[in-house]
Length: 326
Ligand code: CUA
Image (cartoon, rainbow, N blue to C red):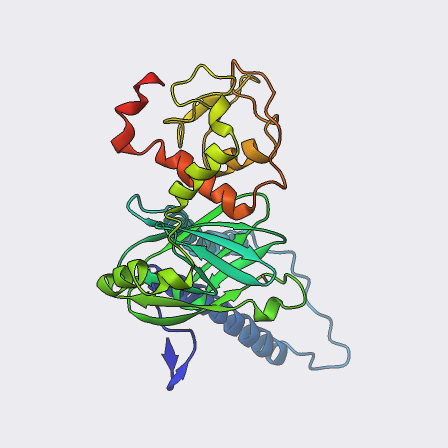
């Protein structure tokens, strides 16, 4: 938005940026209107009803129900517009489209690390394709950070010990600022980076080509690395794909409800799996014993994300036939 050639907000770079700005404009105009109205009335009344004689005594006014009611009734719709508009926009921003490309984000003092679906990694720079919804699955290795891209009007906290999610769809190619928007220690102000929005073809080229050596990576996708880790840590000994082991089979569980020993039912999402690795006895699957040791300190946040990606891949539609035993 520009006023008199001055750029008030960063250029809108995502599908919902325009709507965020409109709501913000509405709230500002509403506020401005009442500030002007109230300030004007105070001034006018102060002059008009000023004391004119030394012995003048003001008239006692007890109130007017009619006046009070009418302003309340008149203002409720204005507040409700802000509420429903804001709620609708919040829901839109917090509901990730089904076909979104997933990217893992790990915040740590003081940098941003990104892991793409094919295992491509980058630090403080994130390449994304234009016109495609991008889902960010974010966690922190230490303290609370906040992922903030002003041009996209995207801001979401990045928390240690759990996963937060946000999404955006960039509408034009270019380079955009990325900030950490939560004070996280001495070098918080240096925890910045760039989002590079490319044509899908360019992005594919970047994803498969050039950067791969830089990332040191022929290690494969997070899911493939997760599978190697799963076997290396011996998880497969208990969590046998066909079931029947001391631990439940993990085939086909991702995103599905899980019945717990406590009688509760939880959804097997990223946070549930993370917790099961770090604090395995907190949520025991119905019919199993609390015998799994914790892997806290033995696996990094990045490795946990790889394990999650692997477990998620066990629920991919293509493997449905193989998971018939579940
Ligand atoms: Cu990370 Cu501020």
